[in-house]
Image (cartoon, rainbow, N blue to C red; front, side):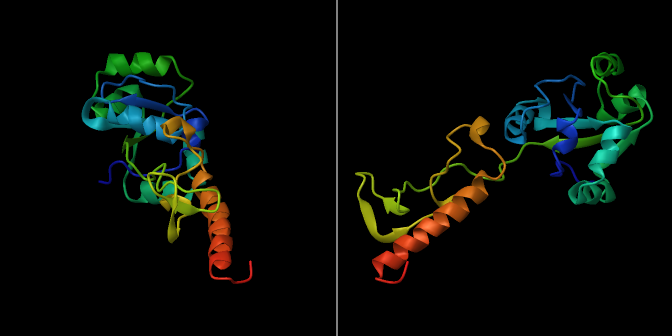
Length: 189
């Protein structure tokens, strides 16, 4: 069975709950997936369970990646809290107390997840023309970088990443790098 499937984060942002292998919430579920990834990896076994109720399962099924995960068997189902605890392998009393603090209602959908690095923040140091810089700040001749190969706009912490930042730096940086390359070869900008 697939584990740690990358599925849409939207159902989590709409009220899904993430619990660890002990059946406890361990972070603010409304944080982004970059932050959650770090927190999941710090849990016992480096795994967590995304819990969804019928309303959230309906929402999740509007995303092709969730449907693919469900078809692959990554989405498990439990009729009540006791069955959900058995599925997770945690203490039923602990999980019931966790669920009592949420708005989730049975039956439940559950997806076992883990954190993963799927993008980087940063890269080669560049100037405003996308020329790659040496340690002393001078540009290498004829070496340009943009997008994921160049330093990014997200900063150096997981909280700085927003969806779309990679595309933003790729499109804008690519445009600037193309203009720089054209200028260097004497072409039309």
